[in-house]
Length: 87
Image (cartoon, rainbow, N blue to C red; front, side):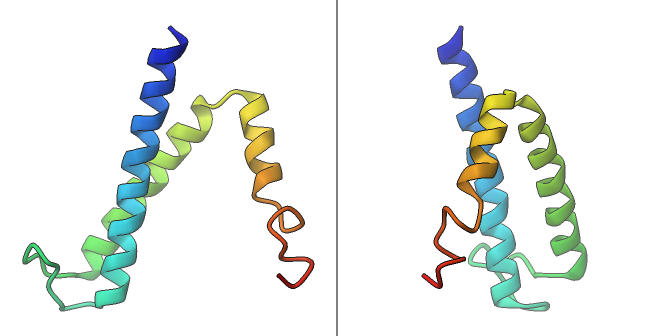
């Protein structure tokens, strides 16, 4: 059962990462430009992508155990990432 749960979390995280990457591409291209697949980047496309990313992220975060959440917060802390040390 733990393996199935892990696969679901990995799948969710993959989809979240896909949306993050798409959002990055849309912002880099800019409004009115076309993606590699011919989609025109619009404010509505960016807003919709942000909204869906937010929904998926909230669902994913809610599915994490409290220990995993604490680990992620610690892993994302500025001290751990070297930000406080000017790295």
